[in-house]
Length: 127
Image 1 (spheres, rainbow, N blue to C red):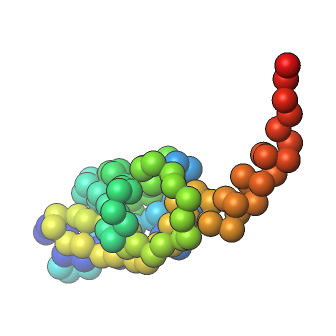
Image 2: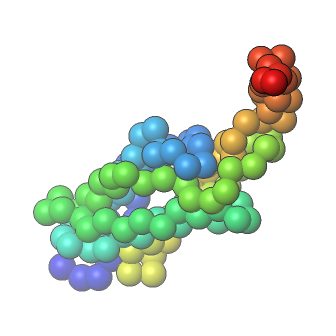
Image 3: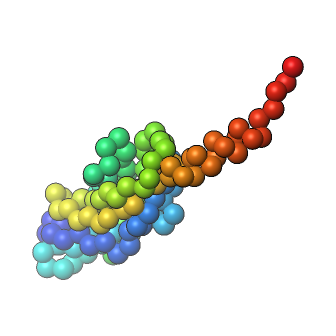
């Protein structure tokens, strides 16, 4: 078996929220140039196109060449903004594959205004 030649996404989430675990964790398949599974290959995840946010996680492939990520989340400071589209990338031996990821950075602007209004209405003065 040779070095990793192809990285395939078996499953990748299409939406994530900053500070929370990905709802469904990525599953990545790595093969060599002959199509054989790569065992104990390190697969890293990264986030591109969303300034100020990152994913930094790594998993090893099993005997079947599959890396199943666990406890992966998007890191960064939540801010009020509309969702943005990024790319989640997976790399093994310099071979990269990516998929779109819609990132909810916190509340969207409408939800944030509604939350602020509800907090204002529920505030009380203590003397």
